[in-house]
Amino acid sequence: MARMQDVRMQDKGQDALRSRGGAKGRRRRARDVVASAALLVAVLAGSLLAGTGPLAAQSRIKDIVDIEGVRDNQLVGYGLVVGLNGTGDDLDKAVFTRESLIGMLQRLGVNARDADLETDNVAAVMVTANFPAFGRLGSRIDVTISALGDSESLLGGNLLVTPLLGADGEVYAVAQGPVAVGGFSAGGEAETVTRGVPTTGRIPNGAIVEREVPFALNDMQRVKLSLRNPDLSTAGRIAGAINGFLREQRKVEQASAEVTDPGTVTLSVPEAYRGRTVALLGDIEQLPIKADQIAKIVIDERSGVIVMGQNVRISTVAIAQGNLTIRITETPQVSQPGPFAEAGETEVVPRTQIQIDDQNDNRLAVVEGNGVSLQQLVDGLNALGIGPRDLISILQTIKAAGALQAEIEVM
Image 1 (spheres, helix red, strand yellow):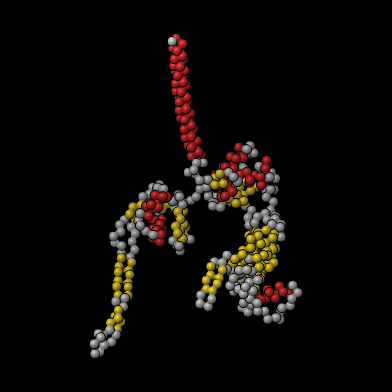
Image 2 (cartoon, rainbow, N blue to C red):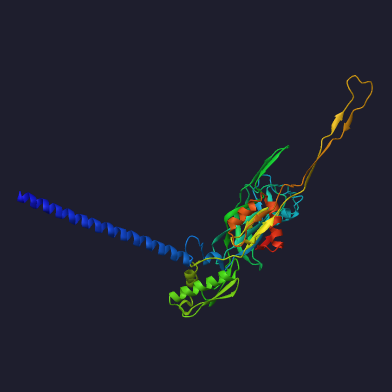
């Protein structure tokens, strides 16, 4: 009995220890949960204050600036496309095509000056391309082919060797190859079906670079970053981010980037990056920047498209909108004598119906303002029940009244 009581006492002691250990574990887990929640709140708050949260959309520097001097160059050339299935130029009308064909044959040893050329499988074309920055000898670029004469289609054609010239008149690339056309045209005597533009095509990797454009980027000591959308706030943030990065990396002790104007940030290459300007640009182009924008409304009156920026604000205004519509409908009727009438004439009797809608049931509507969001502004304008065409006139009228704090640009 005494041994059994000892066993029970030991079990009770172990249960008490387990209960105390369980309570301590629950309290420890609760403290861990509270600490984790506090840490999460602190991280979210810090990210929002720093402008790195999901509410602050950020872009990389490389996506909002261009490096001055690093750009594409336009190339153009004149050539012939052969192998067309009877859809080429009419040589009797397109004199330039005829002379080009004769000149090409003469260079190949064929005298066709006095011959009566009747072929319709040749078309004169203009060849255009963009020569990329730092294009190297032997690299390939895409070219676009456009018919110059009265050719119906370039489908199935092949471009002959065509030099591509730059603005200085020098040859920078040579194009040749089969033309890829996205459109087609087919028809008969009574109907013709055309899809896309069959007189324009492309040759992917159709030109070979023959001359380079020299540009020593690595040796530059001052680099100018040109903003694609000039803005003082964005330029200041770019300069601040670059200077902060260089100080953090202990590359400079004073500012190396400064804002020259709303569209330019001038960067002086630090001593640590002398002769390695490309490495410097590679380091800073990934820095995140929150690009700012002015309050602007862009209107395309031809299509009725309206685009508003997020910073557009409007003061509280009352708007009434109405149009005077007059509809005149002519429904002439034929009046003729009865079936047993001895005499009479058939006449056309005019019948005119006029409807006037001045929308006199419309009332003033109040559009709230004073710092509302873009969504609230759009909801207020949509509450008027008007279409894009009338909305364009309303926005212009609000701007004239001085209640719209935004720039209106009409395309």
